[in-house]
Length: 424
Image 1 (cartoon, rainbow, N blue to C red):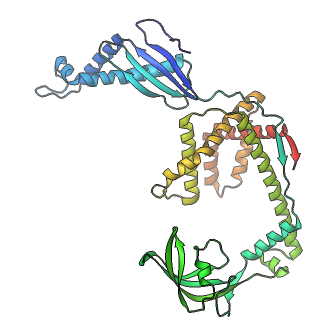
Image 2 (cartoon, rainbow, N blue to C red; image 1 turned 90 degrees about the vertical axis):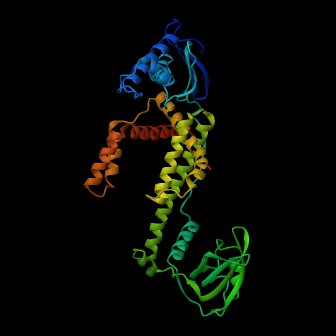
Image 3 (cartoon, helix red, strand yellow; image 1 turned 30 degrees about the vertical axis):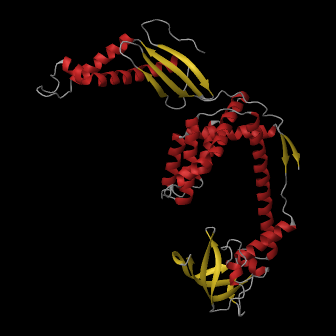
């Protein structure tokens, strides 16, 4: 590093200046004669289209063009030199950028060589290590009676119904239908009022002070209840319209039939199978997370900043589609979200480089048959022929990306097979 790739005086010279993580800085020096020649060429190009008083377009004397457009011609020369010699410098210095290089400094003085400073982001050099014999704890999640009972309780809760309670006043286990209006510092809050709102007295999500303030309130009674609203004291004028209690369905064959089973034992058997499947999937996820964390800890590599930004944007876009569909982010929300996504984006990008290195070492790759099987699996979920055609087109367009996903999956399987797994 530090040596010019060319030494001939009348030819451009390229030189690596600095390597900082995944950013390589290099210089480009273009002889003054060539810069001057390009500036003259620029003047001729300007002359062909220039409009000057007293002259038809393209007919103004070159002396006047020089007087009026010399600076613009020099700018054109610099732009042309950048387009011509930055790609050549990348080739000769054997720099493979992962994003368009940036010209960070331009040194241009009359009669002197043009000097450019350019920054290019490159992929990290990765020689993956410590990816075999990784110690891993495997925790099991069996379908115990306690787990089955909890799942049954959850099902009963989800199928519970509310009915009027004849109690005279609100108690801790009630559901209360209320009308309310909020005020703060003696002024009504226009957006904080409602009618027929259901309040679960057992919930921890209620406004601070609300549940306590409603205790003992009679049906039809109106109270002023002190609450915390955005960490500030506020007052709710609350009228209790109705008091309800929750009724859980009995755990019997009728309940099982409502869920599509013939008997309660049949429901329990099905639930147990679901719990066992979920437990195995959770065990597998936890093992994979341990392996990924071990790989990341042993292979701490730099990352190209622009690829991290692109990964963050991709993650933000997936979240927007997931939660908002076709709607845009509310004003300012995307800006708040992006910094929070950076750690996960860096983790995913770094892991992809590590897995690629392992795959290259172990000669792991996606086979055409595996890519085809992946496509066939996706086609099974297509609703019609149009969706199938779109999927086939997508697989063709993104074949390399899909192959990379399959390769990474195979690589993680390889790492798991070579791990030292112990039952926790």
